[in-house]
Each structure stands twice: as C-alpha cells, then as structure tokens.
Amino acid sequence: LTSGMNLTTVDVLTANNKRIKGLLVDAIEHGTHPWLSGLHEGDIILSVNQTRVNDLDGFTKQLQQQDTKKTILLTVLRHQQRFFVALD
Image (cartoon, rainbow, N blue to C red; front, side, top):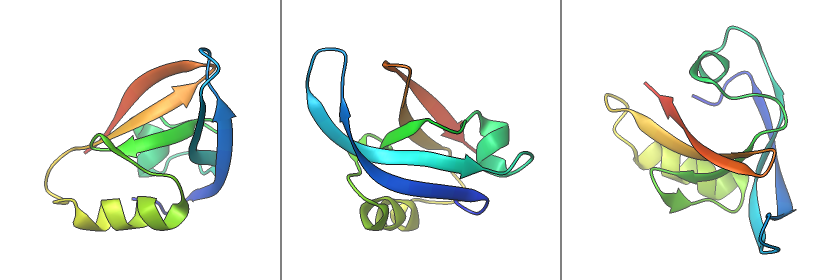
C-alpha cells in the first residue's frame, strides 16, 4: 500500500496550537493505489484505523497488522483540515 510514496516524519502545529507528529507525504506517484484513493503530496498521515502513527516504523507496523481484505482508514491532515482516506 505504500509503494509509490515517500514519507517523512514531521512535527505539526494544528489550528488549535497543539503540536503533533505525523507522516508527511513528500512525493506520490500518480496512478498508484494511495493516489487513486485521494492522498496528495503535502498530506500528513496521522493515524491508521484510528491508531496514531508518529513515525514510519509505527505506520508500517500498523499497516502490517491490518487485514488486507478490509478497508484501511487513514486520518489525514491537509491545510489544517482533518479527513479520512479509505484504502480499499
């Protein structure tokens, strides 16, 4: 699910001045599964199926624990707005 993406751990200041960690989507290849699901360059991934991810290792572990036959729900921050991206 992460092929075609470059991710970097970042600290983010939210709209309510709370500092959180997430994964910045540095680059994403057009036509890949994450891109077709709605992820964009500049998005910040905050959680996988509502479990916070603070770094690439945590993100990878969460993805590995998921049932690949079910939808994986990412919480994403884009322009200070949180929303979900469903990876089917």
